[in-house]
Length: 311
Image (cartoon, rainbow, N blue to C red):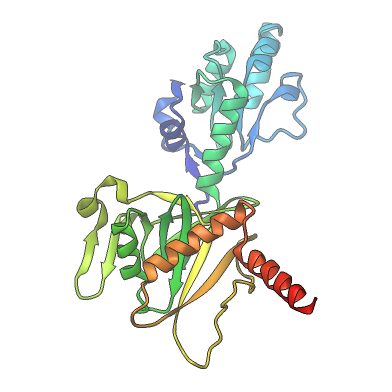
């Protein structure tokens, strides 16, 4: 988890223009994804001023400031600038920057940024970026592959064949996100995002061959930087003593942060084509999310047959 994000990173990610204070971009840090629109502060109410947040001025704030008395406006803008706390001021719609705000920001070393986006869209864009950068992260052992648009995390003991299966899936047209270590974070109440650590991006380890660069060998269409994790497929060495689900009625889930991700276990045995099986599992999961469940259809047919024989 990153505890802070530089204003410079925010500018690069959102395409905002630097109006003033460019030399402070790399040193000014943002510690929260919350954004403040300082409406009450412009009236002089500072009892609960969230100085640690980005201060966003939209049409409402700029118009109100324009009607204020010049001296009062200068005092308010000065009071809003807390040198070691306030990360930056942002003006939407390329609205004119109040002269007093610019002067106060320069005096306290606070950048002033501008964007052409409407206030609501800009706020959403900035919040999404900051929540992603500041989100708590953890690492999972496995291989993450995009199969027909579904993020499938392949897990299992070391040496069970996860990377080799992923290579087979890549050859079948699917895309690699991460091998061996998958960094995950929670995007919202229902979504877990998985990505590769920077040092492992686009790389795949195959025992007996070593490290291969998937993007170099198979092209840019064979990789992705991140994806939602929709399904977990756990590979287990087959054992006659272990019972595996044969009808698809066993519901398994793995809890990652606050999200329960569906999980299935697949036995690994000589002669089984794991790539095709995992591909079918992904398609079957998609069918279930669209309302079609083959297990329920089988149970319905079985009940109908029992009823017919009973009659």
